[in-house]
Image 1 (cartoon, rainbow, N blue to C red):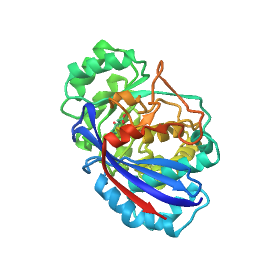
Image 2 (image 1 turned 45 degrees about the vertical axis):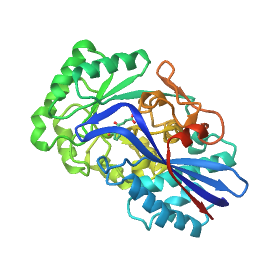
Image 3 (image 1 turned 90 degrees about the horizontal axis):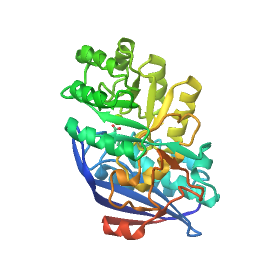
Length: 368
Ligand code: OSB
Ligand code: MG
C-alpha cells in the first residue's frame, strides 16, 4: 500500500437528546475522522471513538490525537505495509491506546478494500446481506424510557438495551415489563454494581433479560465469573474486554456467556475479527457494540457485523438515532429492524463533505 498522506479532522456535533448513564451525560459528541490517501488518489476513512472525557475508558479525543500525531502516524510512515492486518504488529510497541490505533487501522482497511474493488464486509469474511438492528435507551426516568421504547418499536428495532444502575434498576425494569412483557430487552450497567449487590443482581433474573452487560468493575474478569455462577441471566462483557487475551481469559474463567465486540475498544478490525473467530469456535455469542458514533464508525461496525458469529442484534442503530444530519451519504437507515449491507467497495458510504465542514473543529495534514 503506497500511502501518500493522512488527514485528521476533529469534529463536534450535538446529540438530538442527551445520552444519560450513571457515569454522566453525553450531550455533544466530539470525534476524530482519519482519511488515508494513497499515491493514486484513493482514500479510506476511519473514526476515533474516544469521548471528550475518559468516563468510558481511559482514552480521550486529546489522547488519541497525541497518539496519532506523535506515535502511530510516524510508525506507519516508517513501516510500509502490504495489508491492513500488519498494522497490529506495527503498533505493538505502543501500549493500549486502542481507540487511537483503531481510528488509523480502520481507515487503512477501507482504503485496502476500495483498492480491491470489494466491499469491506467481504474483505473481512462477512456472509450477511443485512443485519438485525438494536437500539439503546439511556435516559433518567421511566416515563422517558417508555416513550423512547414506543418510538423505537415503531421504527422496527429488534432489541432494546436499557441503561441501569442500583438506584433505578428494579423500578425501571418493572415499569417496562408491565407495558411490554415479551419485549426482547437487555440491560447495560456500565460497572455500576459490586459483588456486595449480589442479591440485587439475582433479583434481576425475574425480568427475563436477554443478558446483563458489564455489571461489575470495568477491568474485572474474576468477580464476573463468581457472579455468573450465581445468576441465571447471561453476563455480557464490554469494558473488560480490550484484547484477544481478555476474551480468551473471560471464556476460560467463565466470566461471561456473551461478548460485546467494539472495534475501537479492542484496537481495530483485525483484533475484533480475532476475538470473533475465537468466540465462534468456543460457542460464545457476540454482538457489535456502539459508541454513539458518527457514520464512518457506524459503517465499519456494519461491515464487521456481517461475520458469521454476529447472530444477535447489536447496538447498530440508524444515523437518525443520534444525529440530525450524519457525516455520511447515504445515512444508515433501519428498515423493518434491519440494516442493508452496502455493495459498493470499502465501507460503501461516501463522506458528506458539506456536513463534515459544518461541524469541523480542527484539521491536520500529514504528508508521507
Ligand atoms: O456501554 O455500550 C456502552 C455508548 C457509549 C459508551 C459506552 C456504551 C454506549 C452504548 C451504545 O451503550 C450506544 C450506541 O452507540 O448505540
Ligand atoms: Mg456497554
